[in-house]
Image 1 (cartoon, rainbow, N blue to C red):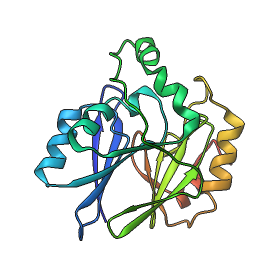
Image 2 (cartoon, one colour; image 1 turned 90 degrees about the vertical axis):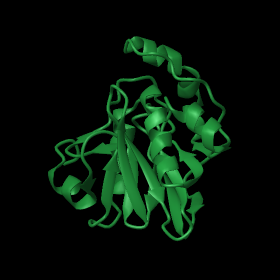
Image 3 (cartoon, rainbow, N blue to C red; image 1 turned 90 degrees about the horizontal axis):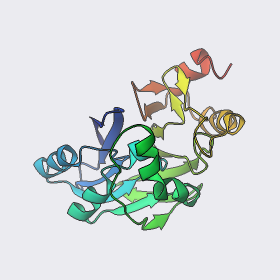
Length: 206
């Protein structure tokens, strides 16, 4: 499995393109902005983009979804509980002094335990509410794409609409910290980490 990271937008979201090298099928996680750069990468590698996987509905993680969808036809997957955030993305962006993302419609709602096949690889959906009501993580083999649930030495903020600190801590402890220590965590912002490191050092979860 090949993983490419592109840092997008003024809030520097980590957008990930995950590709099966055998089939060349790909999924993209959180195309938050800079659609032109994302599509340039997809076209330069002749990737067959099948899915747009959204860890949650905050505006900085969905800004390029509409353009990527239009250009590739990829299906958009998200948890239903974050629909209100997608619908209110313009107001979110305005609060940060940023332009509103283009609107789009979710193709399929996902929930805990769902599986998504990308070529020869399989992604499992883990619901991890707290940063947002519909927050999810996507687990591919020994890699997990955690959105804004868990960071290197940090956790997602919970002071935005729908956020819940206790729920977020419970999600991390019950859904992520039960995974193998060796599992790599690709975060929505900042550097990647491992389950082992965050269990040992993360000051929010001791």
